[in-house]
Amino acid sequence: MNFSDEIIEDLSIDCVIFGFKDAQLHVLLVKHGIGPTLGQWALPGSWIKYNESIDEAAERILSSQTSVGNIYLEQFKAFGDLKRFPARRVITIAYYALVNIEKFELHPGPTEADVTWFKIQDTPQMAFDHTVIFEKCLAFLKHKIQHEPIGFNLLPPKFTLLQLLELYEAILGQKLDKSNFRKKFLKMNLLIDTKERQQEVSHRAATLYRFDESVYNKLLESGFTFEI
Amino acid sequence: MNFSDEIIEDLSIDCVIFGFKDAQLHVLLVKHGIGPTLGQWALPGSWIKYNESIDEAAERILSSQTSVGNIYLEQFKAFGDLKRFPARRVITIAYYALVNIEKFELHPGPTEADVTWFKIQDTPQMAFDHTVIFEKCLAFLKHKIQHEPIGFNLLPPKFTLLQLLELYEAILGQKLDKSNFRKKFLKMNLLIDTKERQQEVSHRAATLYRFDESVYNKLLESGFTFEI
Image (cartoon, rainbow over all chains, first blue to last red; front, side, top):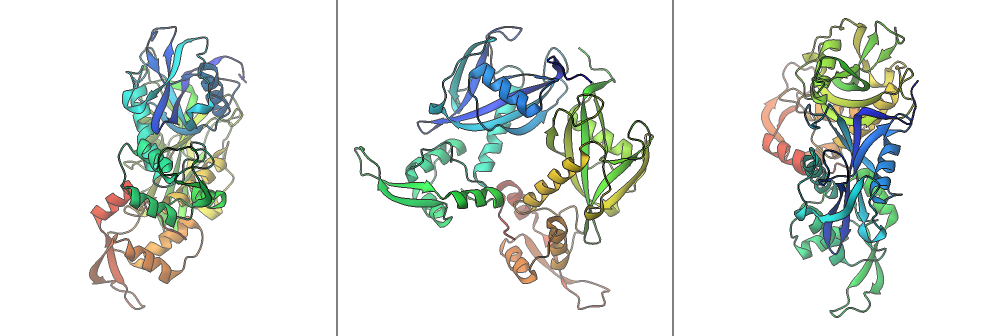
């Protein structure tokens, strides 16, 4: 049986890492430093080895190319169209994650010329079919945020309703009605009023909330419908 | 570039086909007729070829092994643990579908000794990690039915609330409260009262409903939450 360190030639991993910062949704891209796509931007991605599971491969590749590590990567979808990769037949398995940008320092790996966060509305042209993978994953995220609680790892432990609203607006790519949003969220019993207020703000200090962890986990399981 | 008829050796497809009949959820299995797993039951599955997309491969494999064709197969998930396949490193992409059993005639393919529907509570031991794939896909379906309308292709065009309830109970694997179920479903505006009643039944003839197609499609898009 071949469980060697060699790569499986027909199969790759690509990672769609969404980041949140300053009320903006970003995506993490690398600039290729070698090979036929030299100088092109792309999703972090590479080949799976015979001696690692696909989940392990995703973690290794992301961390070696970008230094973003120790995060929960979830499988999104395999992309297997005939001509998606120019040189030969390659099927790729896309993974995704949502992270707080400020928690990570970026360092390009040995084969990357650069690594950086792009605002999702300002992404450059990407190599291969990576724009398609990114857009499908973004559509999936927009759907997901309307049915599952998201934000535990994106917001500070105590946050204002405005910060939560901005997270939803950043992912959905549209403005939401503030008072409707507040009403719907408070009705879900997901937020706990910490009885504290924002410090050191020039405007009127807003109430700080935190997620009710048990409701959050229950909603993760059961899902909900948040109509926009 | 290799776009030949040869198989990609590291990569397979497995299909989890759920069928509905007589108020029971079933899964479609084949009995292997050749090779080291001769005589074992398994999900329909085989190798992807260089000259077909993964979606095309899924359709070809399912139809050649079982005669179930012309159905919408959706990608579920890739399974890529190191030792999931005994002889060598193989990553598999699982697809799934939900069909009305009565619409299909089964015929085993040239490498299959048999093909049949098993009630999901009576499945035999399966080859490789197929039991794991089946169980994960069933859990996914249970979650899905609480958030998306399902049943358009499983129920007759006009159906009773009891038939719809039985579909939900079969997938969820538990009894539901009848009057609660009726109330929740009627509130969704998904069902249209056809003003007709069941014919030729010994018990009191129940009202026949049909799905409101535009509400059905809207709910497919937006999702809903059906708490059980």
